[in-house]
Image 1 (spheres, rainbow, N blue to C red):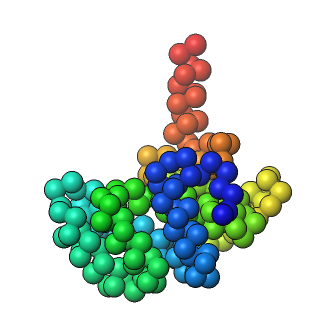
Image 2: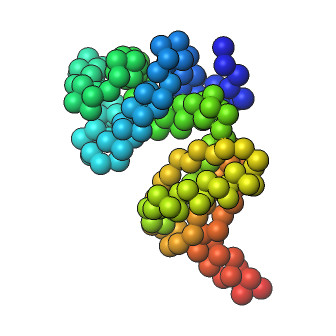
Amino acid sequence: MQTSGGIEASLGGRYALALFELAEDARKIEAVERDLATVRDALAQSDDLRELTTSPLIARGAAVKAVVAVADQLGLDPTTRSFLGVLAENSRLSALPQITRAYRQLAARHRGETTAEVTSAHPLSADQVTELKQQLRQRVGRDVSVDLQVDPQLLGGLVVRIGSQMIDSSIRTRLNSLAHAMKG
C-alpha cells in the first residue's frame, strides 16, 4: 500500500487512495489522472453535471446510469468509468472535487513531485506555468506539479498552497492588509 501522508484521513482521500491503488495495479495512474481532470473541467462547464453530482433528489440508479453515460461520452478509461459508477452507487459523487485533489497529490508523490494548489485571478499562460513551476522547484527543492484554479475575486496575483504552507501574493490580500494598517 502506498504511503499517503494523511491523505486517507478524509472521505475523499480514502476514495482517492482506493482509486490510486486500482490505477497503480492496472498501470493507468496517468490515464486516470487525465480522466479526473476531464471530469473536473466538465463539472466546471456543465450545470446539469454539477446538479447530477450534488443533488440528493436524484435516485441512485438514475445517477449510476447518468454518470456512466457521461463517462462514455467523455471517453474515460474503464477504471475511471467503473469508479464513477461506484461513487454514484454509494451516493458519493459530491466528493469528486476532494477525490480529484487527493488523487493528484498521490499521483504527484508517486512521480516524486510535490503538488502545489495555485489560484490566480486570471488563467495562466503555458509560459507563466512553466516559470511558476521553476520558481517553486527552487523553493521546495523538488519537482512541483500545479493544480490550477481561477478566482476573479483575487483581482491579481497568486495564492499558492504546498502542503500546509501558503504563499499569498494576491492583490485582494495586499489591499486588505493596507486597509487594516490604515485603520491603525
